[in-house]
Image (cartoon, rainbow, N blue to C red; front, top):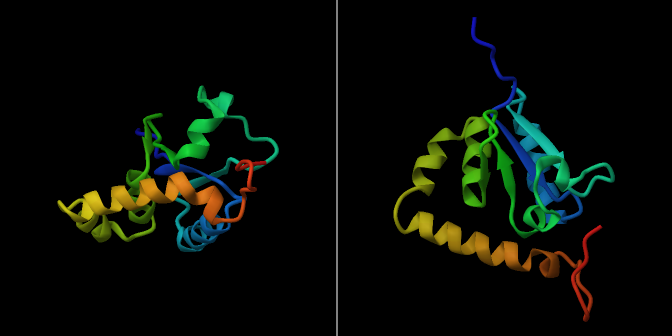
Length: 129
């Protein structure tokens, strides 16, 4: 008998990022079958080292982990998240040439600037909790 994995993807998100928290909140609401495991990297008990990663890896871009322990990053995480809540048809569209490149480019710009754009930077530096 094959063991059924209770989740399809674990997402590591920054709960202190207002935009990120809003999207995660929507996904939590949509995840009626609990196919997503949500892990807040801003939580006091979170340690990147528990996952054999450095903290900056979780800060620099969104991370996802599949049940077989495969790590995915960036736009692919969002594809898997939306597929898990039933928007599987959307993933095909996001893989089309041109659209895929545009999404990757847009995400890279967002990831590089999200601390600044969400008000978590001073004149001297960007900080995370």
